[in-house]
Image (cartoon, rainbow, N blue to C red; front, side, top):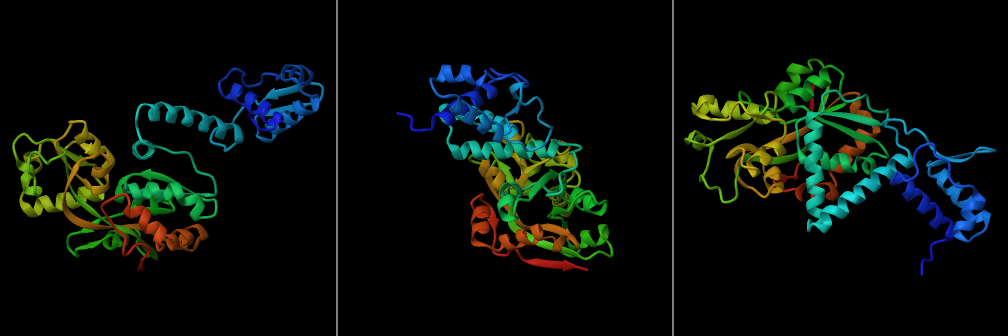
Length: 364
């Protein structure tokens, strides 16, 4: 027997009708006495149910005009009805894929990968609210993980992600279009990460390099590594199709420097001109047979069930200029990266070394 209070059962029934569009925006709900007869209860019980729906932001009551479903949900604004509708759609999707045999972990991973793709493809995102920090920079699954937990870490603030490559992130900082960037740009002359590029693109500014993690970069290959690839020299094998990253990506910067050192030319690598916006897209291309090998991080290979040949370990930094560094949500992020919780969460993605996570280096 359902022990849920009757007024809540009535409210939930109406809510489901709204979410399934059986009752549309602006429609009037049945009068209180009619609902009382339908549910075999007192008018007071129905009134309490309507008050609960009004509290959820789903209906509005006006004296002499009855109770109506709200007519508009402002775009991008967080409202109970908007949130309830999204949860309903998510539950429908989950029911479909879980029934098909996928595990919750597989679904979570797939949704994260899909979100990464859309973040990379977004051209001009609307200006985020004041409690949202703007991140522009290199793609990394750990960044998406941090964004998902940012509200808990930073007292209700959110992190809006745009994956535009390491160079794109630093340019966005220079132009005032982001609050922090993600970068792993390797400088061949100094054999260091990020510092030389920050000095060139943000001259005269005091900038913090907050280490998120070190990550393994290498060749993403089909299961079993059928071409028996061991290094970049092997990419010149006839018939291999390569999935590359876009200009400005830290991975592309590293690859081009290594190719120059090894005497490899783009003409020796079919597919070199094929540019992917994220590590996930590189892995997806290989998983779907569109490419035979690509350069990316181990976490992307793991996510798609592919094999991986490690070539180097690189440092991924959050690049944060002053005075953004002193902003409380940024400080909360920096402190969280030092915690065991953060390091375990990032490590669980695979291919990360978090021993130096949370360390700060200043570029003057």
